[in-house]
Length: 639
Image (cartoon, rainbow, N blue to C red; front, side):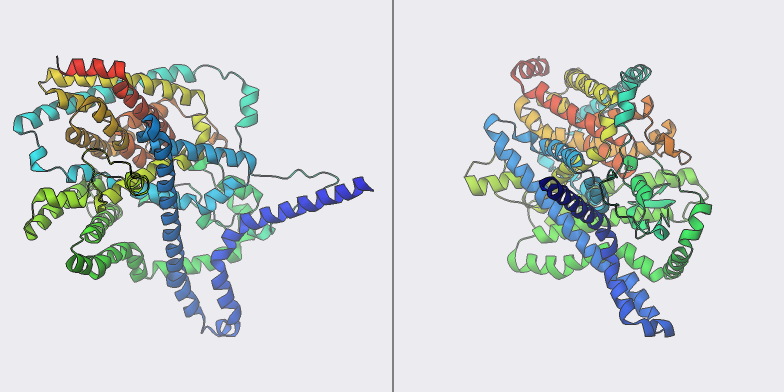
């Protein structure tokens, strides 16, 4: 009797678990369509007569996308706030041991570990992440570049070195880039080519753990039948092309383009690590045509309506710029005039310039201008880099603003960015701890942009989770060792080259962290006594130079785009040595801007770049801030 009761409770719990799984997997797909479905059911008679079709189309093209974007903005704000709170908590925990500068990197590692743990405990969480979280993470990653221009913009004339000093810095900048880009790529390529030729240590084990599938309940004689999705909704619209930040990518599937209820095979295809990325070939048209005829015909009608409405397309493309300039005029200018606080004004202008720069590059790359000269068009598109355009435009804006207000440029730049992070400001307000030397109790628009960069580094934990198979491999271990060796070599050789070209001690020491993220370069410069202005200029210039060169170099190396002809069997295939070496080299030399570029283009080299950037940055701090190494570098710089 007791055994029978316990068995019934087990069956009941299993059924409840399956119902919850079914709801969490399909509610996000159904919920966006509920307003449209309710509207249709309430006006069936009008729809039959054709009177409600225009209203339905208006809701679909205007109302629903507007509410969806508002919801997306809200969740992006939640991710930003949660990331900053995590950074703050880690800063408080690491401050007693003097490692608070590792807070953003530690946050990335914690997010990665958390997602891996959750995926092991609840396999269905992977599908939930791809449907509800991934698009917000991609948005943050696509726009974290707004913080890159800030260190260049806030450089004043008093901080410049003069003509001769600038020439020597530029010369050593070119020397170090030529040496370490070439050495990093060749060394990584050679080592990885040898490692990847070795046979796997345990082929059977790798085969057992490699294919990661979505949750599938075990059907036994005592279990109830599992809930099945309707067969008529099976993979009705496999995506052939989609776009990410204006770049067309062929052969990727997205949840937005999936049918309202894909079957388990489609779910397995969507929720694999293909976003790292690999291509998923569409199923044969013959097998899909009977199941998708009615749905595809209705969607084709809607798509044709959208294509014939250029005004709606133009509004969707330009509304972020219109919103930014409207906030600038309606809120920024009145607040600045009445209170004398220019932070809202500066923030609206910075966002407007950044969004406009990204849209200009996207529109030019898609347009027909210079279509007859593809080489010139590619070069022009590359030069229309949003980071470069934002740097130049914001530099002109701050100088023009100082002249219009008849204020000192130093005061204007100090109001734009004080160099105080949000976590430091919260710590100062809540605990009473003193701020670091040079920091002030002020949080400007430039500081907000830099906080987005910090948030982006934490969010990369999600991107590492997406590509975890590539990291847990011999190639990932090799990238770690290569990054450690390159960090030691970079710290030593860069300082020696700086002294060779005639740079002073602080300027030569600035090259020790020439390609480290800004969050890690600052403590390295404080420990060495290096020139922080020169170092910030080097870090940002490295990133800008890399973004200008990546389209050409990656295309020459044939790793800019994944091969559209890849088959499903190649999804779990190992990356080749050149792809891994390119990712490691970009992470070491291009830092955060390089990693952001690769993730934005969905390159398979992106996870290796993030891994190498993290290890290289941490080891650079170790080789510059730990006593024995610090004394050696200072002695070399002042000999």
